Image 1 (tube, one colour):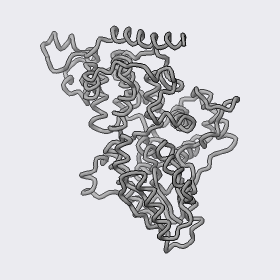
Image 2 (cartoon, rainbow, N blue to C red; image 1 turned 90 degrees about the horizontal axis):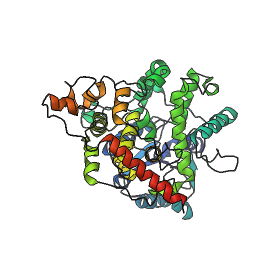
Image 3 (spheres, one colour; image 1 turned 135 degrees about the horizontal axis):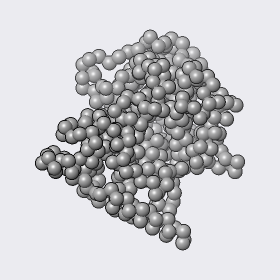
Image 4 (cartoon, helix red, strand yellow; image 1 turned 60 degrees about the vertical axis):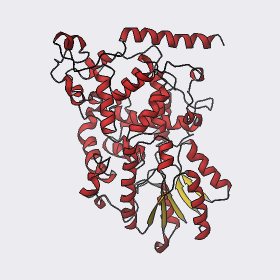
Length: 469
């Protein structure tokens, strides 16, 4: 038997690993493999910081698995086709009669596994990336949920009735086994600001649940405050299980599912959104191939001004909250969730640039790049997606800045050239800068009211044209 690690480099709540240990008794010949397919990852627009983050966890797993008698081999292969050939040849050479792995949701990964099974490989797959199994939540008409709120209600009902198939850590591993990277390794690591999952669980996540969880609803939209958990890179890389996170929450608040209108439910609500987008991709695999969820938007001709897109990428739009957010993304590989909504809305509705351009750029920069969540978020912002914001809802970046960064604390972190601008002026400082003859900031590339009117006309034309077809 061979254990194949993919997007699940963890021992905690890993059903493939658990099955492998239970059905493969010989400790002398326990073998596992993990493929480093940088070419394939980059074709899927993985960021370099995410690749680095995954590779650090792969090296960590070599040591961790050795403690329980499993030899993990890290194999560099460029493509999924090469993975197929390697697995087939390895099984033939070593008389392997079963390969065990956790399934992956994305289209190309699904096709890879289907091809192996069709060629006769005995591939045993488990689901390890969601809390409620995909395909279990359907409407009364046996179709997928297209609106989040009824999905959430069905999600809660399912968990209350069926529980969660949570697995702990295998015998031989413990929370005290944390292996941290040495200083020399971390010095050159792109992802050095993010600790390994074991350390994150013990320190950062534990502190969040104990001290910040109850304040999440109040602090989650303030980018200058560390009010979020920072768990998204770990879920995206599969190094922490969503079912483990859910178990931690219920251990602290056992009646939380019965109080889904409470402030404390807010963080769990985001975890359910993650499940929602993964269930959605399960039912609509074409979303992985640049398809709009709302078909009427598929053939839309976006404005796609390359100069505007470049200015947005570089954080040179002339709107401080947008520019600071893009600088945060470009310098750290992460962006606050409220700011993801603002920057995505600005690109698609102020600049009328195709959401797929922004989706791809985010994937190429984010340490927590995840197809289902990134696609879902961008289509939500562009009003082309499932349960998306209405097309006529267009964020005013100045008002949003005043509301969520009233003193300009976040803006000043990433736009130090505006550090001396007064709080009331910093959200759109052009008149102040001109009055005081300070030419340190670039002009706005669009005027909000004009851009808003053009966006409304653009979207209304789409709605009207489709009504007549």
